[in-house]
Length: 530
View 1 (cartoon, rainbow, N blue to C red):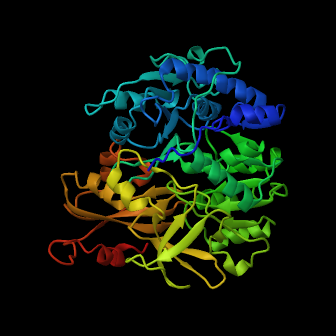
View 2 (cartoon, one colour):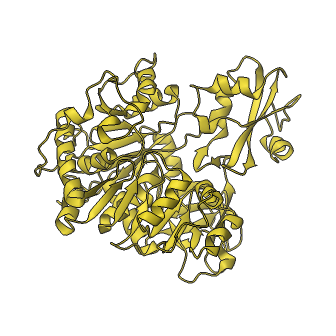
View 3 (cartoon, helix red, strand yellow):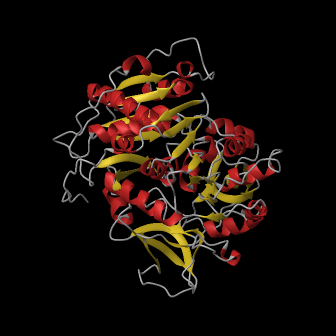
């Protein structure tokens, strides 16, 4: 997929030094957990110190390997992740943040794939990381550094050292400018993983160019401004944590507010205290904010607009925001493309509230049938996208890359376009569902449940849930003494918590369509209600 035709301009990867030169005294990052505010000058100095550390650890552009060496991270949102983003841009290395919600068995397979030179572990996840490092199927070798929580004023954990060198001791004190690598727009900068449709999540390779183009698309489509401030409520192991608002805000010299944990009440307080102008969150968070005791009393007048992403947002929730005078609309994206692909025109009619809008400035979209034929308006087919902000490929997965990436990115989502050019997401092509903003693929969950000795067959179907939008129901052909608690305990450590089914139903015999092929639609039809 690499053309490497694009020359290595010196500005590629120069995010922090350029911004520090343009707006030195402007606060670019606020750490709400510690109360510390960082100017762009300070962020660039931190990035230079981190770049020196990465050089020592070999996280650089490898002249023999065009892809650059990787640093993997298991952490909640903290300033050090921003340091690593800016620093890998300088060294030509690649940042691969991993979900701390995944089980050790899932993480070890991903780390075998990523093969990092350095693994950075925030203290609360030391036990998880130890389980990964001690795992029998571990095949990667790397240095490990511990991100101390107490050093930054957090009180999550204190006292005992976790047995690895501390990040704060390992980072050099020299924050002066560093020599930067020759990187082109085609070089990778981020590995962001998908939800994992057949077990282990795939790593999507995002180049400097795709990150840059997504930033252009977001700034132009949403009308972002240098004076904007946003609370970052997506995790930084997710495309939302970087590409929805963080990078576009840094591009403009705006302000990002992050915290280790984001409770809906805290988001409300931050909107008021920081005079936040932009908010993007998953529907569950937006709904929990409207249900919070402080909802009616919080000053939301600073918000120019809010966006919902990561699954459909109910109109009742949208109306709560509209009643408070906030222009809330829905967005649409995926790790492989964007994630900011659509926008609402100014003064859009409320009748279009259940759409995701029209394609952004530098995005093409189309709806196709199974044979690839482009469908007319109002017919439902698969949504395909084309833009320079698309990811480059899946890491080490040529077959899946060929299926998804090309001139058009196949989203796997069903959609339609109305006569005014607005797009509507109609469902998932491959049974995937979204729970609290996280993609859940039934096949991966079923594989783990099927390992239980009492289970003969299993199909997982999504059912509506007031808190998470959707959760899984495990429909099992099994010994009926099996309980949901027993199944949950069995899945602990095998499967991320958000993938655990919240409901259990028994079926005497799975319906089949054709020779021993389970009829998923029949199961869904019978059990997919509440």
